[in-house]
Image: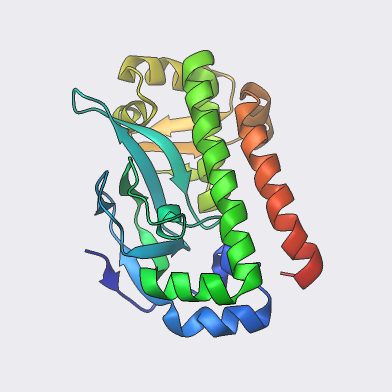
Length: 245
């Protein structure tokens, strides 16, 4: 279970920061700070979740479990998003397992509070609905990328997404862990990482990958990264320009 904690300013989360001040102050009392541990499961597939989570420094994965028990990452959520869109999308149960990829802080709201503010706060509702559309795009594009693009391109996309969310160039992940998330062989990840390292784009050590040349990684990645990023930026820019968040 998530631990209650005093953590960072909730406005580190970009969706909360995009709210006009009056709406943010209205929901602030319902925001509970929690600390999420790596490997923690927030809820299982088909389980009705009771909270919406707004990550600050934590990274959360949406995992699809195959019939043979393997888990494949279909979406990743950090400070740019929220976890729990089914909470305000008709209360449907999600088909994904939700787990913590990187330990860190988040804020959560109870389902009843989300629904109350969703019906009363226009911008809060609009931002949550726009983000739901953005997340659906991410999940769809991830499926396309996993099917059509090389392991090296998938790894570059994964590195860029994690850099955007974590704001760090060092990722504490083994090749085995990344291969499980992407649903490919560990040897394929090791080979792709070796190619990128030979070109001076990353540096690998035991259980750690350091991003050395982001521009080079962008050039090596497929268009899937930009499809998702550009849609998200369009969605959020409306609120940045209007409210100055």
